[in-house]
Length: 172
Image (cartoon, rainbow, N blue to C red; front, side):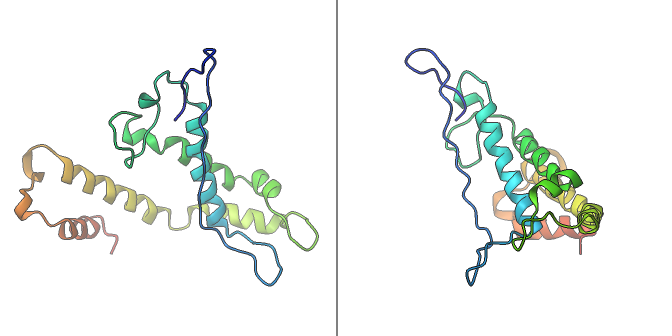
């Protein structure tokens, strides 16, 4: 990923691919992506942008996923920042107008629909934030190196701990 010098010393750009599972068209009609699919696409495209624009001289220090079998890359708590930043664009009314169209005539979605969609962004926001909080607390408890949150392997039950975190954050 990201950077390595080519034979003439110029920067060689990485090859990046997004593979996804999006709605298909049917009966000869084009695919109509749901809003969440567009948001997810933008999120995943943020990872591609991160990969392509990173200027770290050594690819090992540029970015990495947990699936990459070597250490290095950006810190895990930063890994999602570019992608989460890019997914915010789809909530902007002017971006929605440019992205959306009706297949019948190519017209953008009506302003009322775009405004309603944009305003719906914060519906259930407290629940979404609580979910992130629960996952962060779970991660801290599992990976803490001491104190009250240390678990012995034979006493650790990931499911029970996760359920405890969810209940304590009031997600259920």
